[in-house]
Image 1 (cartoon, rainbow, N blue to C red):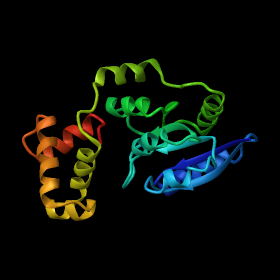
Image 2: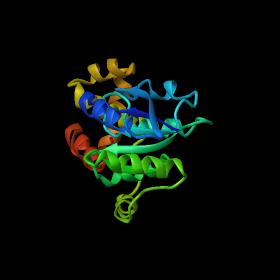
Image 3: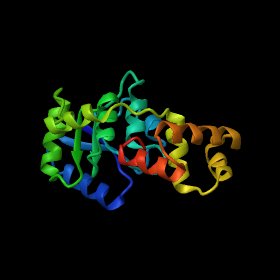
Image 4: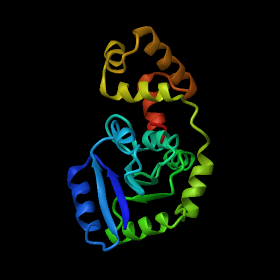
Length: 201
């Protein structure tokens, strides 16, 4: 029996995938989470074999979770679940050790088949996905710079961002200035847009 975990913030989609996967004779869903913030701690005990990770979620993204899971000795095999084909996302998924990158509109039968193949040791990235990843270039932003830009999408002022991230105002200002420079942007709004379009956030 293949033990599967799923981290997906859209309740209806998560419930539908879980219900259909549970119909498969050799798959059982043992973990369901609606955000990435608690995923690493929850999954640190080797409770599942394969993990379906949504790329974009509030708080820690699926890519952040995949990167953190690499440090565990008994980490599940990761499959990214997404609606986005941004080159930066595909590249980060590969660098984080993900075994597959599949879209949410895939039939559940295809997702189940992919779970079986990943559990058997296969890596399921298409030639197009690999081309996208190789053509994207690496992300120039540090993790903290990405955190600040993500927070800036939700908060208007530097003070609010600083409070959200438990950092000083001057530290946040420095991160924003560096992120603007690294993305060749004119301002914070443009830096966020460029980073999102390239799949860095």
